[in-house]
Length: 600
Image (cartoon, rainbow, N blue to C red; front, side, top):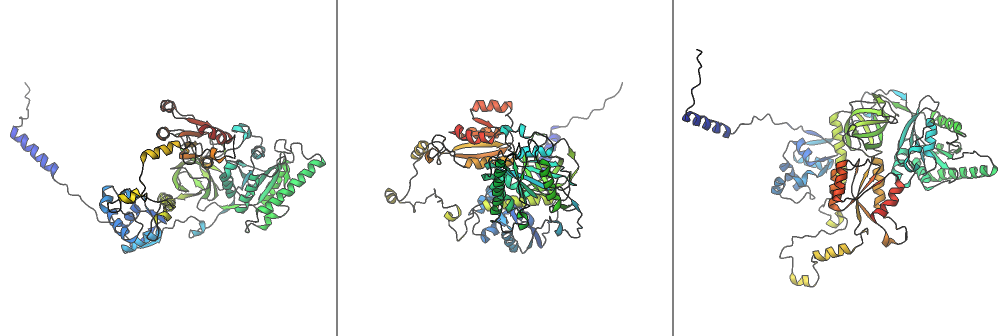
C-alpha cells in the first residue's frame, strides 16, 4: 500500500509567532529609495504666459516655496494664508497665470536666469532652410449680400451641382470650400460665404484667407449693406476685388437695361474706391478702372459666364499667380470646426499657405493641439488623403478641442512643442481675463466700478445708532425676493436664460452674438420697455447631452438648438420627465424671429 506523508499540523504557538512577524513586517516603515535631485539649469526657457505649477516644476521647487516668494514680490497676490493654501491643495493659486516678466522676477529670487521660449514657425527662422517654391492653388472668396446669387454662382463654377437647392430656407449658412479647375494650369479653391448680417465673422475670415474677392451684386437689388461690408473686409486684408453683377437671366436686351446696368456699375466702382480710403496701405494698382470694372453674368442660364471665368483666370495667372514653399513648416488657417459622430470626433477644415501636412503630424490650431488621425477632402469626405499640399482645403481629424474659425494652423511640430504652444495661448487668454488688485489700484478700478461688500463686519466697525440713521444698508432677503419676482421676465434685470447648441463653431458665435441683442416686440417695436432680453448661460457644439438637460432644469433655462441632431431616446425621456423646453431651428431667419416669441 502506498504511504502518504503529510505535513504535521502547526501548533498554536507557531501560528501566533508567524502572525506577530507578519504584523511587524507590515508596520515597518519602508525606506524609499530616492534618486539624485534634478539639477535646475542656470538659464530657464520660459513661455510668454504660464501657470504657477508649471513655474514651480521648472524651478524644481514646491508650491509652498514659490507661493511664499510670490507673496512677498507681488502686491496683487491673493491674501490667503499658507495654511489655508495647503489645506485646499493650492486651489486659489493654481489657476493664476504669470506673464514672462513676472516669472522672470521670481527666477531672479532663486538666482536663475531666463530666456523666452521660441518655437520656430516661419521658414526664414529655420537655419539652413532651402525653399522649394511650387505653384499653389489660389484661394478666391465669394462675398456679397444675402440672396444675391453667390451659391448659384458657385454651383455654376462646379459644373451644375445643386448646393443651393438643398439648403434649408434657400440660403447659405456655412462656409463651403471647393477645388475647381477653370481651364488654368493650377486649380482654384473657392470659398462660398453666407450673406446674412449675423455671419459677419464668416465673411471676414474668408477675406482673410483669400487671394481674390469676388463681389456679387444683384442687378435688381443693387448695393446692399453686406456688399459694402465685404468691400471693407477686402480692403482691410489688402486683397484685390472682382465685382460681378448677377441675375441677368435674359441678358442686357434693351437700352433701358443697359442704362440701369451702367448706372449700377458706376455705383459699384465708386463704392470700392470710397471703401478703400479708410485703408491707406491698400495698393492703388488694385483700383485701376480695368481691375474693378463689373462683369454682368447669369449663373442660372449661363449668359456671359465664360467671359467671367476667363477674367478670373487672367487675374489669377496675370498678377496673382501664387507660389508656396512646400518644404517649409506647414502654416495655414482654420476655415471651420465642428464635432461629428463618435466615429470621427472633432473635425476642422483647414487650408495651408505653405508646407505639406501628413498623417501622424502634431499640430496646433489656435488654442487647440492634436495629432492628425485622418485627412479627407473638404468637398467629399470619402476621399482619404495621405498628404496635403498648400492651397487645397481638407478636413482633419485628431484635435483635442475645437478651434475658432480664422485661427492659425501650425503643423509638423514636435508633440511637446504643440502642447507648450497650445498651453501658452490658453494661459494668455486667461491672463487677460483674471482680475488683479495692485497696490495703486482700487477694487472699483479692477472690477469695473462695482463695490465689494464685506459681509464679515467687525464689532468695532458696526454701530447700531448709525444703522438707524440709514448710513448702513441692511440686507432684507424677503424684500429682495419680492423685488425680483415683481420685475418682468425678459427685462434687462430678469432676462430669459437659454442654452445654445449649434452644429459648427462658425455658426455658434453668431448665434450667441444675436442673443446678446434685445429682441423687439413685433406689435410695438419702438417701445423699449417691451424688449425681450436673453442671457446665454451655456453653449456648445453637437447634440444635446445629459449635462445640458440637468443645467436647464436647475436654472430654468430653455434649450435652443440650431441644426443639431435630434436627442437620443434616453434624453427625450429625460426632457419629458423634467419638463425642459427645447426649440430646434434649421434656418437663421426662424431662429431670430421665433426665439423672441418662444421666450416671450
